[in-house]
Image (cartoon, rainbow, N blue to C red; front, top):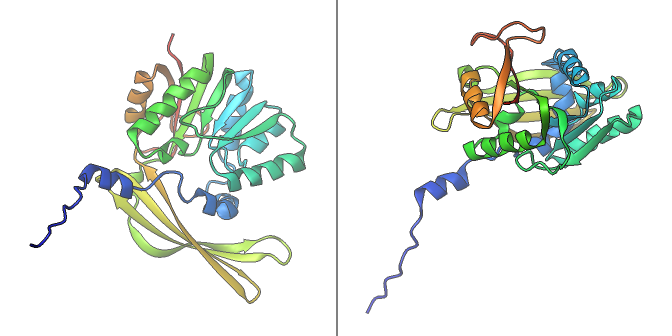
Length: 275
Protein backbone atom coordinates (compact mmCIF):
# COMPACT_ATOMS: atom_id res chain seq x y z
CA UNK A 1 0.00 0.00 0.00
CA UNK A 2 1.42 3.34 -1.01
CA UNK A 3 1.49 5.93 1.72
CA UNK A 4 0.45 9.44 0.74
CA UNK A 5 2.25 12.21 2.62
CA UNK A 6 0.04 15.08 3.60
CA UNK A 7 1.33 18.35 2.20
CA UNK A 8 1.55 21.38 4.42
CA UNK A 9 -0.90 24.10 3.43
CA UNK A 10 0.76 27.45 2.75
CA UNK A 11 -1.14 30.64 3.51
CA UNK A 12 -0.60 32.87 0.42
CA UNK A 13 -0.91 36.07 2.47
CA UNK A 14 1.71 34.91 4.97
CA UNK A 15 3.99 33.79 2.16
CA UNK A 16 3.79 37.21 0.51
CA UNK A 17 4.44 38.91 3.85
CA UNK A 18 7.50 36.74 4.49
CA UNK A 19 8.95 37.61 1.08
CA UNK A 20 8.22 41.32 1.37
CA UNK A 21 11.19 43.64 1.96
CA UNK A 22 11.76 45.20 5.37
CA UNK A 23 12.33 48.93 5.58
CA UNK A 24 15.35 48.60 7.86
CA UNK A 25 17.21 46.32 5.48
CA UNK A 26 20.21 47.80 3.70
CA UNK A 27 20.90 50.69 6.07
CA UNK A 28 23.75 49.00 7.94
CA UNK A 29 25.52 48.37 4.62
CA UNK A 30 24.75 51.94 3.50
CA UNK A 31 26.47 53.53 6.51
CA UNK A 32 30.00 53.85 4.98
CA UNK A 33 28.60 55.60 1.90
CA UNK A 34 25.70 57.66 3.27
CA UNK A 35 27.55 60.91 3.91
CA UNK A 36 29.52 60.72 0.67
CA UNK A 37 26.36 60.29 -1.42
CA UNK A 38 24.26 62.86 0.41
CA UNK A 39 27.00 65.48 0.15
CA UNK A 40 26.54 65.19 -3.63
CA UNK A 41 22.74 65.11 -3.68
CA UNK A 42 20.84 66.80 -0.84
CA UNK A 43 23.91 68.32 0.78
CA UNK A 44 23.08 70.76 3.57
CA UNK A 45 20.09 72.42 1.92
CA UNK A 46 17.68 71.31 4.64
CA UNK A 47 19.94 72.01 7.65
CA UNK A 48 18.96 75.70 8.22
CA UNK A 49 15.27 74.81 8.07
CA UNK A 50 15.43 72.10 10.73
CA UNK A 51 17.90 74.08 12.84
CA UNK A 52 15.66 77.15 12.97
CA UNK A 53 12.58 75.04 13.71
CA UNK A 54 14.41 73.23 16.51
CA UNK A 55 15.69 76.44 18.07
CA UNK A 56 12.18 77.90 18.02
CA UNK A 57 10.80 74.83 19.82
CA UNK A 58 12.48 75.99 23.03
CA UNK A 59 13.22 72.50 24.37
CA UNK A 60 14.66 69.07 23.72
CA UNK A 61 14.26 67.68 20.20
CA UNK A 62 13.89 64.03 19.22
CA UNK A 63 15.19 63.09 15.76
CA UNK A 64 13.78 59.88 14.27
CA UNK A 65 16.23 58.00 12.08
CA UNK A 66 19.19 60.22 12.96
CA UNK A 67 21.62 58.03 10.97
CA UNK A 68 25.19 59.35 10.82
CA UNK A 69 24.25 62.65 12.45
CA UNK A 70 23.93 64.65 9.24
CA UNK A 71 21.33 66.86 10.96
CA UNK A 72 21.95 65.99 14.62
CA UNK A 73 25.48 67.41 14.62
CA UNK A 74 24.74 70.88 13.17
CA UNK A 75 21.67 71.19 15.41
CA UNK A 76 23.74 70.32 18.49
CA UNK A 77 26.41 72.81 17.39
CA UNK A 78 23.70 75.46 17.38
CA UNK A 79 22.91 74.63 21.00
CA UNK A 80 19.81 72.48 20.47
CA UNK A 81 19.42 69.79 23.18
CA UNK A 82 18.79 66.73 21.04
CA UNK A 83 18.29 62.98 21.25
CA UNK A 84 18.75 60.98 18.07
CA UNK A 85 17.32 57.48 17.67
CA UNK A 86 18.15 54.97 14.97
CA UNK A 87 18.01 51.20 14.50
CA UNK A 88 21.34 50.91 12.66
CA UNK A 89 24.42 50.45 14.85
CA UNK A 90 26.90 51.27 12.02
CA UNK A 91 25.04 54.54 11.38
CA UNK A 92 25.02 55.46 15.06
CA UNK A 93 28.73 54.67 15.43
CA UNK A 94 29.53 57.27 12.79
CA UNK A 95 27.24 59.81 14.45
CA UNK A 96 28.88 59.13 17.82
CA UNK A 97 32.34 59.76 16.38
CA UNK A 98 31.25 63.14 15.03
CA UNK A 99 29.63 64.09 18.33
CA UNK A 100 32.78 63.14 20.27
CA UNK A 101 35.03 65.08 17.89
CA UNK A 102 32.83 68.13 18.23
CA UNK A 103 32.50 67.73 22.03
CA UNK A 104 28.76 68.22 21.65
CA UNK A 105 27.41 67.52 25.10
CA UNK A 106 23.88 68.58 24.13
CA UNK A 107 23.43 65.56 21.82
CA UNK A 108 22.67 61.99 22.89
CA UNK A 109 22.19 58.90 20.73
CA UNK A 110 19.89 55.94 21.35
CA UNK A 111 19.68 52.70 19.41
CA UNK A 112 16.01 51.81 19.17
CA UNK A 113 12.89 51.22 17.11
CA UNK A 114 10.88 54.29 16.17
CA UNK A 115 7.69 52.22 16.29
CA UNK A 116 8.17 51.79 20.04
CA UNK A 117 9.92 54.89 21.38
CA UNK A 118 11.68 54.06 24.67
CA UNK A 119 11.12 57.43 26.36
CA UNK A 120 8.98 58.56 29.28
CA UNK A 121 9.88 62.21 28.90
CA UNK A 122 8.11 64.70 26.64
CA UNK A 123 9.84 66.45 23.74
CA UNK A 124 9.28 70.01 22.55
CA UNK A 125 9.74 68.79 18.98
CA UNK A 126 9.95 65.50 17.12
CA UNK A 127 11.43 65.53 13.63
CA UNK A 128 11.36 62.86 10.92
CA UNK A 129 13.43 64.34 8.08
CA UNK A 130 14.22 63.17 4.57
CA UNK A 131 11.66 60.38 4.09
CA UNK A 132 12.36 58.53 7.35
CA UNK A 133 8.70 57.57 7.75
CA UNK A 134 8.65 56.12 4.22
CA UNK A 135 10.96 53.35 5.36
CA UNK A 136 7.97 52.04 7.32
CA UNK A 137 6.65 49.75 4.62
CA UNK A 138 3.52 48.47 6.37
CA UNK A 139 0.53 50.50 7.48
CA UNK A 140 0.59 49.07 11.00
CA UNK A 141 4.23 50.18 11.42
CA UNK A 142 3.41 53.74 10.39
CA UNK A 143 0.39 53.79 12.71
CA UNK A 144 2.48 52.54 15.62
CA UNK A 145 5.13 55.21 14.97
CA UNK A 146 2.62 58.06 14.77
CA UNK A 147 1.01 56.89 18.01
CA UNK A 148 4.43 56.65 19.68
CA UNK A 149 5.31 60.20 18.57
CA UNK A 150 1.99 61.46 19.90
CA UNK A 151 2.76 59.90 23.28
CA UNK A 152 6.20 61.55 23.65
CA UNK A 153 5.35 64.96 22.18
CA UNK A 154 4.75 67.73 24.71
CA UNK A 155 1.50 69.71 24.59
CA UNK A 156 1.79 72.34 21.85
CA UNK A 157 4.95 70.60 20.61
CA UNK A 158 5.86 70.41 16.93
CA UNK A 159 6.01 67.25 14.83
CA UNK A 160 7.89 67.91 11.59
CA UNK A 161 8.44 65.46 8.75
CA UNK A 162 9.62 65.39 5.17
CA UNK A 163 8.43 62.99 2.48
CA UNK A 164 10.47 62.07 -0.57
CA UNK A 165 8.49 63.76 -3.33
CA UNK A 166 6.55 61.69 -5.85
CA UNK A 167 8.37 58.36 -5.60
CA UNK A 168 6.08 56.56 -8.11
CA UNK A 169 7.19 58.92 -10.87
CA UNK A 170 10.80 57.74 -10.59
CA UNK A 171 11.78 56.18 -13.87
CA UNK A 172 12.78 52.54 -13.67
CA UNK A 173 16.28 51.86 -14.93
CA UNK A 174 19.03 49.26 -14.61
CA UNK A 175 22.71 49.53 -13.80
CA UNK A 176 23.06 53.29 -14.22
CA UNK A 177 26.16 55.09 -12.96
CA UNK A 178 24.56 57.65 -10.65
CA UNK A 179 27.61 59.09 -8.87
CA UNK A 180 31.36 58.87 -9.17
CA UNK A 181 34.12 60.72 -7.36
CA UNK A 182 36.86 60.79 -4.76
CA UNK A 183 36.43 60.41 -1.02
CA UNK A 184 39.11 61.90 1.21
CA UNK A 185 41.64 64.60 0.41
CA UNK A 186 44.91 62.69 0.68
CA UNK A 187 45.39 59.07 -0.35
CA UNK A 188 41.62 58.81 -0.54
CA UNK A 189 39.52 56.27 -2.36
CA UNK A 190 37.43 56.56 -5.50
CA UNK A 191 33.77 55.60 -5.24
CA UNK A 192 31.29 54.73 -7.99
CA UNK A 193 27.58 54.18 -7.42
CA UNK A 194 25.78 51.99 -9.94
CA UNK A 195 22.06 52.08 -9.27
CA UNK A 196 18.94 50.19 -10.34
CA UNK A 197 15.45 51.54 -9.60
CA UNK A 198 12.49 49.19 -9.45
CA UNK A 199 8.82 49.97 -8.86
CA UNK A 200 6.36 47.64 -7.11
CA UNK A 201 2.99 49.33 -7.79
CA UNK A 202 1.00 46.61 -6.05
CA UNK A 203 2.78 47.25 -2.77
CA UNK A 204 3.33 50.95 -3.52
CA UNK A 205 7.08 50.55 -3.07
CA UNK A 206 10.14 51.99 -4.79
CA UNK A 207 13.29 49.89 -4.49
CA UNK A 208 16.80 51.27 -5.02
CA UNK A 209 19.37 48.55 -5.69
CA UNK A 210 22.75 50.05 -4.80
CA UNK A 211 26.17 48.89 -5.94
CA UNK A 212 29.08 50.85 -4.48
CA UNK A 213 32.55 50.11 -5.86
CA UNK A 214 35.47 51.55 -3.91
CA UNK A 215 38.90 51.72 -5.54
CA UNK A 216 42.00 52.46 -3.49
CA UNK A 217 45.17 52.04 -5.54
CA UNK A 218 44.98 48.59 -7.12
CA UNK A 219 42.45 47.30 -4.58
CA UNK A 220 38.79 47.25 -5.52
CA UNK A 221 35.79 46.23 -3.38
CA UNK A 222 32.09 46.20 -4.24
CA UNK A 223 29.16 46.22 -1.85
CA UNK A 224 25.57 45.60 -2.91
CA UNK A 225 22.35 46.24 -0.99
CA UNK A 226 18.83 47.55 -1.52
CA UNK A 227 16.85 50.38 0.08
CA UNK A 228 13.07 50.33 -0.06
CA UNK A 229 10.65 53.23 0.41
CA UNK A 230 6.88 53.34 0.60
CA UNK A 231 4.85 55.75 -1.48
CA UNK A 232 2.97 58.25 0.66
CA UNK A 233 1.45 61.46 -0.68
CA UNK A 234 0.97 64.57 1.43
CA UNK A 235 -2.87 64.20 1.57
CA UNK A 236 -2.48 60.55 2.60
CA UNK A 237 -0.10 61.47 5.40
CA UNK A 238 -2.35 64.33 6.54
CA UNK A 239 -5.24 61.87 6.96
CA UNK A 240 -3.06 59.51 8.99
CA UNK A 241 -1.85 62.36 11.20
CA UNK A 242 -5.42 63.44 11.87
CA UNK A 243 -6.41 59.90 12.86
CA UNK A 244 -3.41 59.76 15.23
CA UNK A 245 -4.55 62.92 17.04
CA UNK A 246 -2.47 65.58 15.30
CA UNK A 247 -3.49 68.91 13.82
CA UNK A 248 -1.60 69.91 10.67
CA UNK A 249 -0.28 73.46 10.93
CA UNK A 250 1.68 73.85 7.67
CA UNK A 251 2.30 72.15 4.32
CA UNK A 252 5.53 73.42 2.75
CA UNK A 253 6.98 73.07 -0.74
CA UNK A 254 10.53 74.19 0.00
CA UNK A 255 12.87 74.90 2.93
CA UNK A 256 12.07 78.63 2.92
CA UNK A 257 8.37 78.41 3.73
CA UNK A 258 6.77 78.28 0.28
CA UNK A 259 3.33 76.66 0.26
CA UNK A 260 3.16 73.04 -0.83
CA UNK A 261 1.69 71.82 -4.09
CA UNK A 262 1.96 68.34 -5.67
CA UNK A 263 4.64 69.55 -8.12
CA UNK A 264 6.94 70.86 -5.39
CA UNK A 265 10.36 69.26 -5.08
CA UNK A 266 10.17 69.33 -1.28
CA UNK A 267 7.26 67.95 0.77
CA UNK A 268 7.33 69.04 4.44
CA UNK A 269 4.48 68.66 6.91
CA UNK A 270 4.34 70.39 10.30
CA UNK A 271 1.79 69.29 12.91
CA UNK A 272 1.01 69.49 16.61
CA UNK A 273 -1.14 67.58 19.07
CA UNK A 274 -4.79 68.37 18.49
CA UNK A 275 -6.23 70.33 21.43
